[in-house]
Length: 118
Image 1 (cartoon, rainbow, N blue to C red):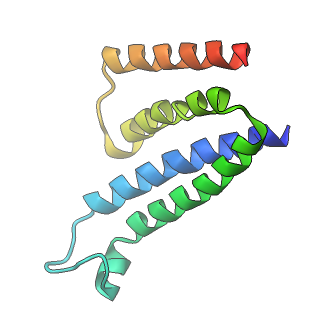
Image 2 (cartoon, rainbow, N blue to C red):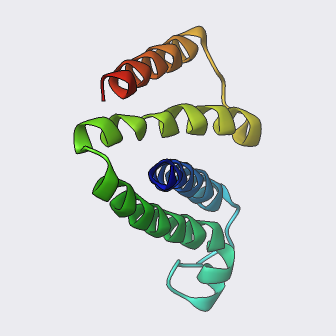
């Protein structure tokens, strides 16, 4: 059971990293602020948090890989595409077209087929 927790945590943290980085780079920035200055760090903190989230995601990914075959675990990462798509709709008011929903259904179906085969 713990192997599923590692895998889910990796996917969730990876998606969170994407959302945080988008939020950070979309912020209105003071003139002349660069990421690697104190002012930039305070302004770009979501980007830094997103990178940290990716780091944690990688640790959980390694724990999951120890317990799952790569050919089973890797397709599960694609679930983060769907999560990011939905979060982008709610957080950034991005559009969700019928094509995006169809793609999400196809991704989900593929993940289900691979998970059942594993």
